[in-house]
Image (cartoon, rainbow, N blue to C red; front, side, top):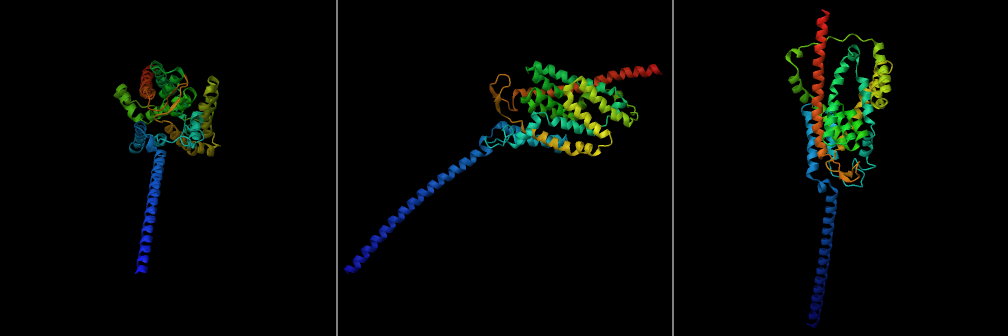
Length: 373
């Protein structure tokens, strides 16, 4: 009996001891699982902080909607899709909040986008686009009828009007000069001028210029209907005379020499324009001309549109070029709104200036016709 009691007591003690040890293991397991859970929560919090959701704000979302709207216009209505789709995609990319220090953002030195944006800030892309434009342009109509240049010159009233308006709205003279180029309805020239005169406004100026260029089918018809009578709409221009190959070759050479002697600073743009046209008209550099007007200009258009769009961050603190103070140089500022308003007015004024001058030319041409009868 004693042996049985002794064995039972030992078994009971071992059972109790095992239970106590088991509870200790459970407590340790619970503590370790708790620390693992807290570690997991900490990891999730770190992961969340690295995502764009953690630092997004309504300003970024507004710009993303703008980018989607550009893409919608390009696909739905075919408004300059080669420009609006890269720009719209760039706007979306540029307004995804990114952690600094990972060399991702367009304004972060060493990032891929920053290297690509170098072509915009240093004025590299616009001359290459002008090279392609020159290689695809036929100046026969202008050569056969030089007075057409007067219509183009009259349309530049939009540039001067925009300059005066920008000065009146408080922009500094260099900023006003860059903004005024929007009135020329030429995106690459607007980017080139803003890169030289007001680099901090490149995004706003470029988006305004290309937006209104894409919306020309919307902006110009009402102005034309307002200023042009039904009788004038029935005017038919005489077909241009046949232009010889020699004239086509001499035109870019004479244009190059004449314009660069008058204004040497026009070399990057007009020099490349006439060079591209010479490649086309010489007849012996067809491969170079074909490359310039197809593959090269397509590549540059992609890079230009994407990086210009990505530069339109909704909010970005940077040093003011005049005062040196840290200010918001993002896209959603009063300056951008003023630039867009000035851009719309400049396109309207430029269109009206060209139309009114054409009406004036018709008066003199009509009198000349009547006097020769």
